[in-house]
Image 1 (cartoon, rainbow, N blue to C red):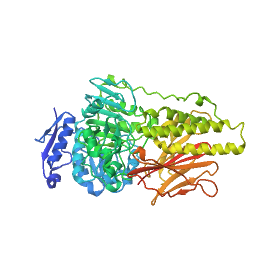
Image 2: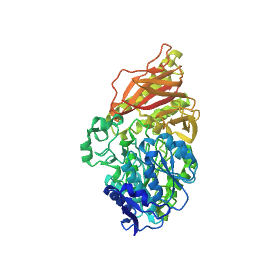
Image 3: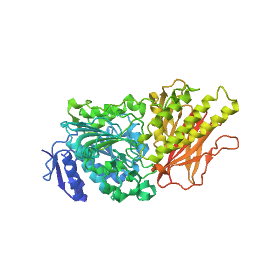
Image 4: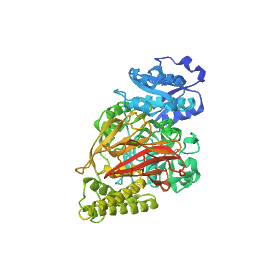
Length: 617
């Protein structure tokens, strides 16, 4: 039986008996610390040993624990002692670049910014990705230090169970004693139990906005129980309104009583791969990170370590398989993550994770289960509405637009909100009719008639796109793409260095599209590669277009998307005296509560650009 040596002590006595080089003993100063450490011990089939008899430390390499900020010096020094590493203090993010063999950064929640995470997981070329341990208060941070050090101390190469969950993909689930692969066909009870059973490796690939996560129609992960306290000025919509918009606008108390919500602290796993969008929220987010799932994962004593992204990455379901296979082979998580970040499929899609916990945590799955149960993921074929899509387009761009529309309309039966599906179907059908009318006029109508039809087509397309959420539009065009790669660029809004996803479209003559998602300012640019426009939302609700704006044959519309799909506002963008869209718009409207996405649907010629920035009402 594995044990964690503990000693009951007072905080002020702690540094008097912590001697560098001595076998580590976990100092327990409060009952809450003991209870949390016991949960971590149970996760690794270990017990607490109050005699203080230590095993040899599993960490022998020369590496460093950095305290980022003087206010976490004591906690970082304790972590260095428990993991038998060296300790140092740094005051600025960039000073971490000078720390040799950096293993773990201990800091406060306020320091978890996109800049820090980019530096640690994009800007440092190391053989081992560092871990981060953070909290908003010293009491919680000290508990994490004890639990995360225990997870590294107890990790070994004994085979463990593995769970993979793909709640967005329907396929036949696989249930064995060694491996579970669950899907959209799995019941809420099966998924809930798999997340709570304490498997060695749990991989979850789903949608998340950083506040909740989708596990199926009857199960959502939600951190907003009565214990969560964040900045009310940066709260999610459900906190502002007191209603759960994911569960038909019932009250939060009713939502928790329904059994459809699962708090993150119920997840139990030695290593969790949280493969979602916005796995953790950085401090620059329009929503206070303390309201998010990531903060709960970082604080959990029933998770040994976790991997999570900090910004949106558009990736296929199996893109992280090399990372999972390396982990399941028994390679420590820090080394596995560093290898994955250097792979082309990670670089091309800017698919990055941060590590919550210690890089020496390792889990291993039974050899013959690795890769044996991957879900069937095939590219969806273009669906057709009658014979209309078979008409040959006047230009490749029209062919591209029609296929995106037809594919989207064919899948509206899966839309959760029927009212939204009905509206999109009406707008989509009307837009397709406009397109076919425009095409038919080339050989028989005058130039003035064709131009008038083109304007009507662009107007209808803008209205459709304003209601088709920008994330769904990405899915529409990505299934028509082939080769993809990442290219470093400067964000047009904040000027920071970011990466654009460049996707070639498999229709000859259609220009490649670029998708730029900035983790620093929450701006998103989804447009042809030649486009250099972005949207900026300023105080007083002044929405502006920056960059080089096409002025000929252009139409635009402003969409304001709330977390609630029925609260979408779609406003016609004003036209200037020269007949081109204005560079700014100050609508006189009442905004929906909570966080919002401001999107300009801009159609110029036969090109589509969706320009988005996150903000608040």
